[in-house]
Image (tube, rainbow over all chains, first blue to last red; front, side):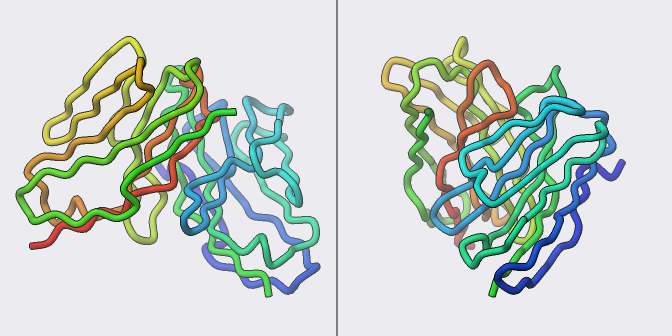
Amino acid sequence: NAGVTQTPKFQVLKTGQSMTLQCAQDMNHEYMSWYRQDPGMGLRLIHYSVGAGITDQGEVPNGYNVSRSTTEDFPLRLLSAAPSQTSVYFCASSSVQGAGKLFFGSGTQLSVL
Amino acid sequence: GENVEQHPSTLSVQEGDSAVIKCTYSDSASNYFPWYKQELGKGPQLIIDIRSNVGEKKDQRIAVTLNKTAKHFSLHITETQPEDSAVYFCAASYDGNEKLTFGTGTRLTIIP
């Protein structure tokens, strides 16, 4: 079982570029979410989804877009990258029965120059 | 919204001693409190959780206590070992859904 798979592991962007961070899970989890991790600020929720076709904003959604067309995939799009989006991004999933018990991917380290 | 404060930000303990990390939360409606461990270069991993209908929960060397009145909960690690060195995050949410609010993390270092 692969669990939660994130790609790429590392990415460098120039200001204004766009890109998509990929996230896939093979546990048939209904809930998927994206967090960013910054020094001294813990993990902050960007967007989340409670099922295919349903997404909602978290604490820091500005500059990010998501969609959930399948149960397995939950990509995060940076529309126009800014240096403030330099961070480590984590995708996580959980089941309805295990709600709150998140399974995290290994993260994507993003630098915006 | 919910606000979770976590202390200390760094903690060093001698191998074999105990470590305690404390968190406070602001929203009295929160009823699910998990703890995650993050090793270097990896994503956080759930190590123990507690719901508001329970005051304490133990799993081998790890325990969590909850004081609903004071709105704080703590992680206790006994007989610490080098592999306990990591960053630990507390979190809180309503009804155990996946929309967790995390604390800022504690970097625990076990000194051999």
